[in-house]
Image 1: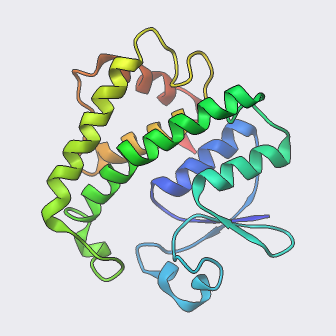
Image 2: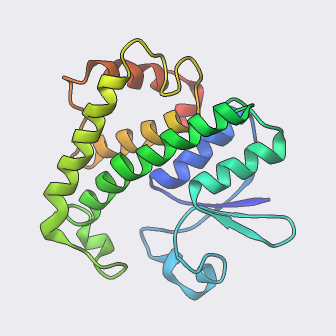
Image 3: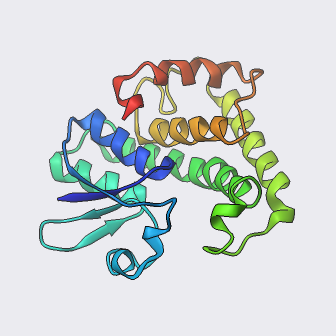
Amino acid sequence: MKLHNSVGPNPKVVRMFMAERGLEISLEEVDLMGGENRQEAYLKINPAGQLPALELDNGDVITEITAICEYLDEKEGSSSLIGTSAEERGETRMWVRRIDHGVMENLANGFRYSDGAALFKDRMRLIPQAADDLKTLAQEKITWLDGLMEGKQYICGDRFSLADIVLYVFLEFGAQVGQPLNADNKNIMAWYDRVKERPSASA
């Protein structure tokens, strides 16, 4: 297998998941900043032009970070990162979905439509007038989540999961692009510091 890798939060989610699972997969670096992912050679691998992409030994390609992580987990034998029972898997997928739509998409598009516009203006339709509202929506969802984190170590209770990885990576990214953590969200702040101490956080 080979992971087409680049800068940015999405590839880091997969690298952090791999680190948690102890997986070593060959990385093929793609120059995202230079637009290599929008050139013909890469578009043959992933027509959406997004990163990362997992190229299997038989030539098949899996894209989308949740699908890649779930594939790797199943391929290596199920772990608590996705869940070892139907109940755990359902819980993980529920929280990943909520984080994807409530935090990740709003935060990322808030960046793309404002500070990141120079990079993305020729790659996707931008809605600059929506940027501030999207950033606000992301913060509101983080605060909502903060209230649900009372007394919990991780998103799924005592079990560290893909939901924690996705949220951590995108909150880390947000802090780098002008959307820092709200210090009033004490539960999220404490959770963030716990996750930051994990060796995988530097993947």
